[in-house]
Length: 393
Image (cartoon, rainbow, N blue to C red):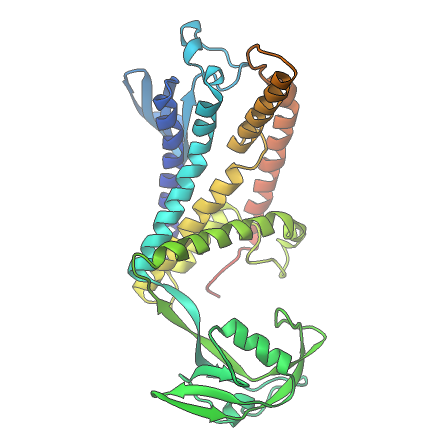
């Protein structure tokens, strides 16, 4: 089953990349640019066919695809007859749309997949229903029923309020328990349609107050674990929730690129961050784990797999817009600089054509970026082979 998941993920990623290139191709054709090639894969050509001015084909290595748009930079040598339709001679708006189209397609894929999952399959979310009670380790050992079980809490109880304050989310409930500290508390639960008031005697433990991990903060502990429940949304409700998920993806990507970059040194250790950097191979392996999850229903596996594909599309779309050549974002940054400089020159009275950026001067930076990205990719690939992130242990 894991192999099936890996193959399915690879196929989904290949389709996404081809659609990415399709975005560039369609918009380039729309603005009259010449797109001479559209291929799926890399390496030796297996099959191709000329239709009009474009050669369509399939290559031997199914690791992506590419579109050849004539004249991407002034440095490229093209047929003089194609010069008027060269990419670098198109207007600023046309170039911006063509360069943005690939990432735009990834964002559309992510939005559509997340929306469909929310409406049809639903998502697993942490609920306020108790799935387990346990002892609490106040010393080196953990013994006894724990405060929750000792107070009469049972599996399936849903937390309604804590110390007179209504509980709507497990995260909020956990925070209030930690802030309460040791001592008796009032806890209202719902059981079989009835509300019961329990009085657990919380104990004090040393943990990080914000994360719950090991730490030196003295916080309260109850000894309970939350359950998971499937939440589905109607077509109207799913719209804002879809964009909430997309927004969290953007903030998560920002956090990874800014605050987690220092964790790269841990990717070969047991402390590897499961939410940190990962290669395509690692993502495919996680896709296999999702499909082969032993404790999930088929629908849950399908939903989680589609969310994973959406997350990868979102990450690729964001990464592709980073202002680094040769990424699309690098070309967009150059275009932005070019237009900003032209605007300043016009303010000083210049009325001539836009002065293009000299790409020859940018080649050293481009080559350096390619080397860094290639090396970083190899590093992540090695980590995902020898120290993979696994969902199913």
